[in-house]
Image (cartoon, rainbow, N blue to C red; front, top):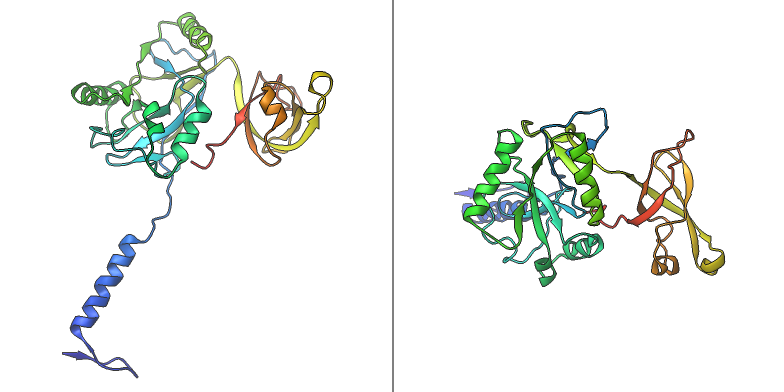
Length: 292
């Protein structure tokens, strides 16, 4: 059989089929758009909320990760490239957690996971698992599924984050103080009977003695005294346009080579003035994981 296109030469059925197959393969191999992973996100704890009976764990200062059963993704759906040894014997179902290199190692963790090829730096990290989003049960039941898997398939590079039952508010504050003394960031508390629901929810709360936020660097302000000739403070702006200075929290190296103009930084603070300006703001780090 011959197909004769208008104004063209006849084409055999075999040639047309070959072209169709080529088109199908091209579509299959075409890069897929990056899609964010719909995760369950915490709200901020308030002392008015009674969390007795909830489960608490350390809030790890790492990079959010999502294992979909075959590959490791960021919260924005971008693929990570760990070596095969890192994900060996991980479960065939999704688990969610934090890629973590230990306390005060955030910058090193981000540097490792941003590289788009496997490398041994991954082997200094661990995947701390705190949920199983595909399971339909309550939080404690979902986490038990992950615990069962890793008990049967132990690995040095992944673990289920331990959970402690909160007795009362005094117990919560005692554990928070212990974690902060060790250099940790704070706590996460979760309702043990909560179902997985993507988005920010009051069934997960982050507990910290200070708050943190992000701001854009507008200018470098010169230092005085011992900081003469280097950074004294950053002039920054919040998303709503509120401007203020951050003059503390910097190492000597960061004062010599400060965050560039236009960079997004994370800072900590203790409440806000009536004007909306954060109280006692202190620099934490450049937000280098923003696009992960």
